[in-house]
Length: 340
Image (tube, rainbow, N blue to C red; front, side, top):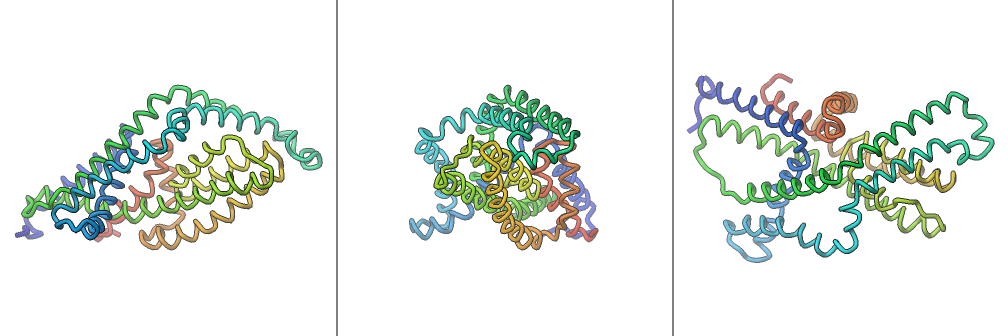
């Protein structure tokens, strides 16, 4: 039986659960565990999605289906990796080196901007643009240098992501425990609301990013080659499209800028085609964002941009990914408490 709202133990447990939840999220950001936390959610909801379907397919009892689903979620990435490793080994293991080369390539493209543009357009650029080009090239080159030491961190991140997937799958297969004590019940409520927010935002954004990535892959690997044009670093650009697509709004700008610059290194016509294609598919993404994410979480664009700016300033690029999730969860908790 639940304790009444006036029970002091319940008030203390509620406050303690909020503090513990906030501390856990801050610890995740400070220790760079965000990929693992996101994979915990992916593993949890994937197991919950597979469970009833596998129960019908394999005619397993309801109590056995979650365990079977957790096994599938745990083994499926290993199976896919084993099948795809011969073709994707270089992309996965050498990703930092590829992006280091891509950033250096972008830096050279920025410096050579006047030569790449048609003469009549290049002549219209103000002299001050040269300093801007040098500043941009210097920034890109510095980021390329920083990537030189991230090879081991990249492999560790992949390991943490898989461990997070296992944790989420096992948590989803665990049977519910009735009669929780006040603190356990409040922590369960906090995690439940966070999971609901995760499902609303991250899962929707995941499918949006996958949609963008598939279209971008078709454009880079099929449409452009049909016109006898190929972009360098195409596979790295496809992976970048997926990762940047997980960031609402800002991810679109990153993809647009990088692909247009790489296209400009081939020819102005290719750059124009890249920009037109990206604008077209991202118009569809804006519509999906507005209908799916904005409607479900009641977040305005100005709110989202503001919190992303602050989180990026404090936690770096990981803050951009975490900002929509953390802000929507905080808003849900405040709404449930009657504060907003």
